[in-house]
Length: 171
Image (cartoon, rainbow, N blue to C red; front, side, top):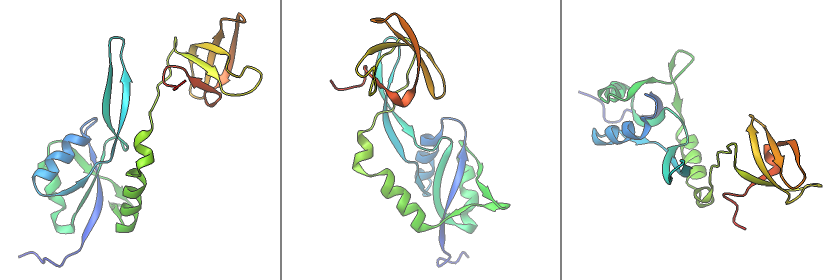
């Protein structure tokens, strides 16, 4: 017979790719407390825009259970394994989980939008000699963009942080 006074701990499980929300739902159905924080992002395809719920942590779901109940999560087909630290399943302190939840559930975060810059997008400079100068993205790098300035007939390279996306800006 299991001891009901055994403490519950937060663990991190690793899921199959893009199965975080499915794993969360199935874990909840079998009685496991699960947490999979998500945000809403607008994705644009060539023919439509769509709001998607995207997990903050790719392939991870947090679960709260007792040590002896850890095998329960493997009843869910989307669960791969536990995240380990020093050879043992990593335990997250209750205070850390509370701080994480408070940070991610802050109302100000729900209003953000993730923008994926692509060649052909229209942007403008935020500051400097080219402030408000319209440009079109020719190439996207990790931290820099190659831009075409149609009005001036030039190509320039700029830091991503120096431009404003005209498609998502509210002008």
